[in-house]
Length: 443
Image 1 (cartoon, rainbow, N blue to C red):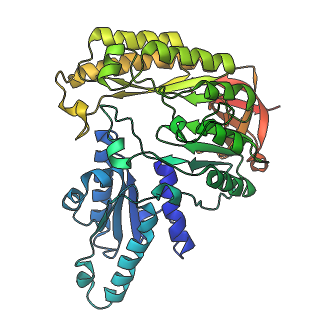
Image 2 (image 1 turned 180 degrees about the vertical axis):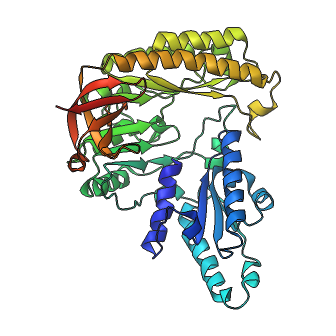
Image 3 (image 1 turned 180 degrees about the horizontal axis):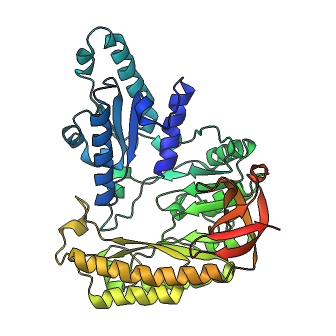
């Protein structure tokens, strides 16, 4: 989601005459889109922006620095104290305002550069973290895809669920959905530019259009999937991330009749313990979650399921943790993101008793990671000798002679093939697995 929001901001600058650079030492404007979901993410953002601004201060004193996103929304004015050279703090509903704020400061500094640069700094701080009606409708523009064959499409913003550990509802605001027609128009534009696969983004994506009237028993999200599926030239559809609450049978059934839907779902479980799920304010039981996994695999037998899991949530006993471990072994996830619980300021969980020691969190994290990795390595090894349909997305980052792609199950594949095949979906014979990456050749 941050990647998509960042592209929207970049598009506005390019559209107005600025040029993107990969080198911080060449930049006149440096913006960071921040995340607050874990403390480590905040510390990385603060450290990076602080380091860059101090390194460039002597040689490029005119550079404009801005912090956007969830940490900006959460910390607000505090960021100006933590990063002395910071010029802008822009919240999650104001991405469409970033360019006008930055460009105004840039022009002010250009006018003073030959005169008195220091006077250009005075009063230049900008902070805008206010809510804005219809802000979800402004994340709709893209940079020229070029040879890129995949794209993210934001279909909604915000979240209502207020899980006890999560800061997102406080930084992203309430759920707000875009009209189906607008999303379809955006995807058509991307397909016309050469995109073959889109990923539909929402904080809880299957709650999209929950207020829409049912059509033939289908809710708003499935109505959107069907509309996007009809677009000529689009080959694949992904979405991320659904929540077990509100996961209707119409979505399960969509996997039986929408072939463009990829055979992969990222489905956050968070815990296998009903007691911990209740403390987390995740209003479902583990049995219901596991039953949904069974139903989805029945609807699409080759479906890969990945998940998110938190270990060390306040009050988690060894028995609670072992229930999570057991659920992982039963479901046999293709992969999982495992996180040690990280207290977030202002969330209910941060004030709970029985906070778990870091060494216990780390031990559980490593133990569960070992279980997940063994399953993932085995599942990938079973693909050696098979033929998989792979979207060849572009050159490998480590070997220019190879193309990197992904199967419908979202498994990374490196293929010995030339750049003329970028953007194609080709049958690939899987020759080798290194555990987490597959290697193959054109059939």
